[in-house]
Image (cartoon, rainbow, N blue to C red; front, side, top):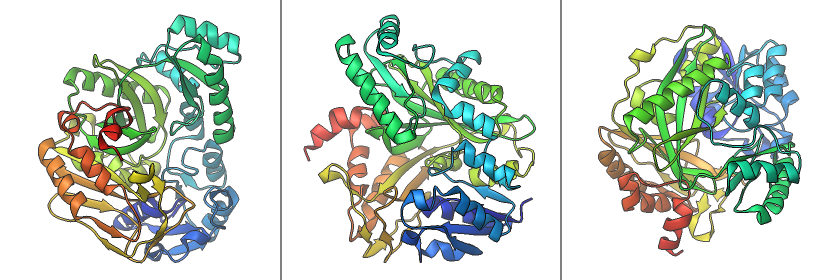
Length: 451
C-alpha cells in the first residue's frame, strides 16, 4: 500500500481524497495556488505546497510544479481528482516516468478512450451501440455534406477532444452545416488545442445515463450501476441521481453489460464512467468514456455502500477488487445537487466572493461534500461549485422530499447559489415522473420559471 499520496487538485475533491487517505492510514500532500492559500482543508493534509499563481495555467495545470511538489513531499502516488489534469495522458505518463503511481488508467487507455472518435471505434468493435455517424473525423465541408446525407438531418457536430458542450453544434440542414462545422472546429481548437470533429445523428430529447465502472490490474471489471444526469443546462449537470428513473430493467442490464464490455476491450484499470444517451424508445447509445472519477460519484457510493475513492487507491496499489459483480446490489435512491456560486436569476452568472455565513443541513441520509465554510472566499478563477448536497433514502419519492427539505435548510449568505433553483426543479411534475431530458431545463423549465 502507498505511504503518501499527492492530490493534484483543489477544493471539494482534494478534501474528499484527503479524507479517504486518512481512513486508509495514508499520508497526504496537498498543492495549492495563491488564490487558495489559507484554505482550511489544506490544514488536514500532512504537507501543502504552493505551486503557482491563481491562474490554472500557472498552477493546477503546471505539470513540472506538481511533480516538484511530489518529489519534495516524498510521495508514492498522485491522485488527479477530476478536471484540470485528470484526463491528461501526458501528465499520466510523466507521473509514471518519475516513479509516481498515477491513480487512474494507463496513459494508453486514457488516450484512446479520451479521444471521442477512437472511443467510438472501440465501442463499435466491442458491439456497444453507437449513434449513427461519420466513420471518422471530418476533414472538409464536402466530407461533412456527404456524411450528413448518409446519417440524415439533423446532425450533431462534436469535437473529438471535447467536453462540457464545447465544440458542439447542431445542423438542421445542409444550408446550416458549413457555418455550424466551422464554428465547432474553431471552438474546439480554442478550448482543447484540437479542432477535430465528427458527425452523429441528432437524437431528440434524450436522457443522459452513465454507468460507473471500477477495474483492477488483474482483469476484473465490475459495474456499480447507473446514474441519471439528464437535468442539465448548456451541457452542465445540475442534478444527478441513482438509479435512473423509468429505465426498464432490460435496458439497464444491457447498458451496464455494454459498459463492462467496452472497458474490458480497452485493457482498462481504475475508475471510469461510460456515458450513454437513451432515446424515447429506451434504446441506448454510447457517447464517451470519462477516464477518471466523476463529480457525481457520491450517489453511486450511497446506493452501493462502496467508497469509490478508497477503491481507486486500492486498485492503483495493485490490489484485487474486494468484491465481485454478484456482490453489487444497489439499494434505495440517491440524489445529488451541485451547489454552485451562481445567480440563476442572472443567467447563472458566477458569484465569487466571501461567504458571510453558512449553515449545512443534516439528518438521516444527508451528506454535504464541500471545502467551503463561513468566512471562505470563493475565488473567481475556477469552477463555481462550492459543494455537493447528497441525500439517500429507501425510495425515490422519499429522496426527493429529503432533498427539498435540505435545499431549504441550506444557508449560504454573502453570495448567490443555485440551491433555490434546484429546489424548484425537484418540485416539477416532470422531475417527479422521471420524464426530464437533457434539454428540458432550457426548453420548458426556464420559460415556465420566467426569470
